[in-house]
Length: 224
Image (cartoon, rainbow, N blue to C red; front, side):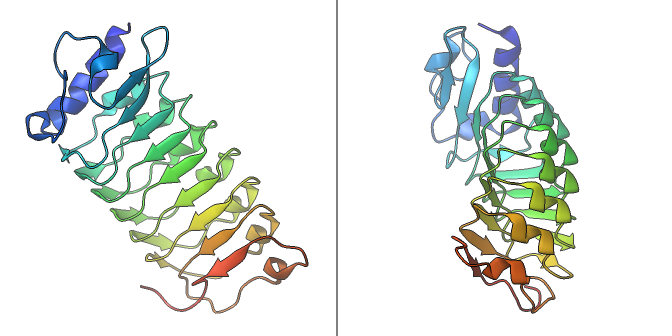
């Protein structure tokens, strides 16, 4: 069992009003981590899943979560978290799923999230995130789902997203994005669903290649 993992979880409990959580079974006690509500561990006692969605977490995400080196799933969605996404989450080298949707998170998306090379799903919709979409997200070569809807993101859609070769779902609607939809996105041969709101009214011709398995939703029209 890792004392570092225990310290990281206690930091989360104390920074998000743990006493007011809907479920907090065994949290901040001496019980083994695998018995704490929403926590799963591997054979070595390392935390591999932390799932506390819809659990009335209020406060900020502590940087110590970046010390959960074996973590594969982090789900803190549908809570009342505020403040910034800590860049330390970019140290979670085993992470496959990151769900922080439907909170009150603000500030920029940390470019360090582009270091999560095992990541398959990134869900950040319905927050108050600002600034550009980091071009570093284009390095997430295993990413299949990217949902950034309903934030306050600005600037162009990065051409680097065209490098996400296995991406299936991409949704950027409800932001303040500008400029054309990059033609590089036409290389995303596995894409099945794309949603965006930009200032362009032109979808790249590559999207209509014969045999293409994907389709476009709300891909044109002004800002929202």
